[in-house]
Amino acid sequence: MLSRVITFFRTGPDQPLIEDEGLVRKIFKSKRLRLFIWLIIGYGFFYTCRLSLSVAKKPMLDEGVLSVEQMGNIGAILLYVYAFGKFFNGFLADRANIRRFMSTALLCSAVVNLIFGWMNLFWMFAVLWGLNGWFQSIGSAPSVVSICQWFSQKERGTRYGVWAGAHNIGEGLTFVGTSLLVSAFGWRWGFWAPGLVCIFIAIMLFRNLADRPRTYGLPHVADFTKDYSGGKPTGASVWELQKVVLKHPIVWVLGLSSATMYMARYAVNSWAIFYLQEAKDYTLASAGTAMAAYPIIGFMGAIFSGYCSDRFFGSKRNIPTLIYGIMPIAGLFLLYKVPPGNLVLDAIALGIFGFGIGGLIVFLAGLIAVDAMPKGAAGAVKGTIGLFSYLAAATQDWISGRLIENTKTVVAGEVVYDFGPAFYFWIGSAIASMFLALIAWNIKPHE
Image 1 (tube, rainbow, N blue to C red):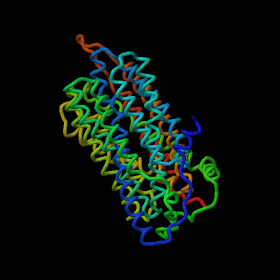
Image 2 (image 1 turned 120 degrees about the vertical axis):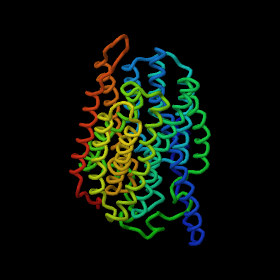
Image 3 (image 1 turned 90 degrees about the horizontal axis):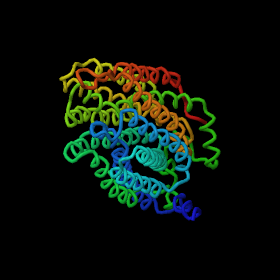
Image 4 (image 1 turned 90 degrees about the vertical axis):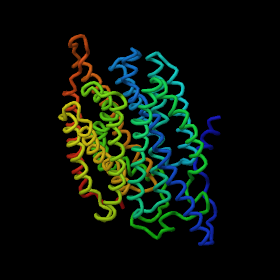
């Protein structure tokens, strides 16, 4: 049984190279377009099955289903499992048939969301959300592996930026669409609706993603594009290339920089809607509307980051990373200081934060290290940095939950939260990320 599962997910054997150059160009063009479009759509919808709890927090709290600390613990469980899943599945992705690997993961995550919507017990929520974390961890690394397999070094920055912005599509759909569904029909539909939609998306991923070019009789992408700026194809084994990644200190530095950035990122993902409702007295629908600026402008930030670094900085990422690193700090500070009742200013603050985070996800969470490391180990790069990033994101979730819970007071019979300590923690994380990124200022491609 296990051998059949391994065979199903393993990348296929190399096929004899197609000699007709016209046919090679035709197949390459067709497959690259389809898989890139569906990598964007698929990765975006992964997020609708991950962030559903963020939207449902306030209604679940009001109904007495969970406490703030319990929700923080559940969120942390997902992210801890996600962190180790990113590492493990990143190494598997270098050897996997991406079409099967990624589509199956989204299907399983969708099923978990459907079941979650029927539950009422804390321990069941914790178990299911942990399972969801594992399946969610398979979304990112396979996408990057596929981009490295089908696009060359000079094409990769722009494509990576567009793909990395896909998470903003999922966040936008969650913060607006899921918020409206939860407001109208209750918190359970915050899980049922994403689950139902993602079953369909998983089927489409299975139909439209692709395995490595060589499994279709196509040449390596560097040979196809005649772009050897990232190094020529090597005969080294996958494990030899992955060991290079594990031993390179700059990967660990970038992992720490990404980790502290993810603390700030997931603070907003997990707690901003709750903050807007509790501290600024917005309805769930209004909070979701303000939050929409975060993923929408974040998508622009992600797209512009890759294109900007390719077009204006010769595919160097250092100066753009510094510029983008300042924005989340400014956005968090403004969000905290804007008085209640200023929806537009709150949206602007979230937009500034989102634009900066969008670019940093491109640079710190993968592209800088992917550029520098062997392309045959792109999954290992994403897995290693992902381990750092999501361990930090998980740690943020339970720390934030405790900071918010411990500042709770009762005023005139109503519960009031002081978000100051949490915001200082989040802003400090964003500052640490920016300074850590400076260590990788002069990183060069590995020979």
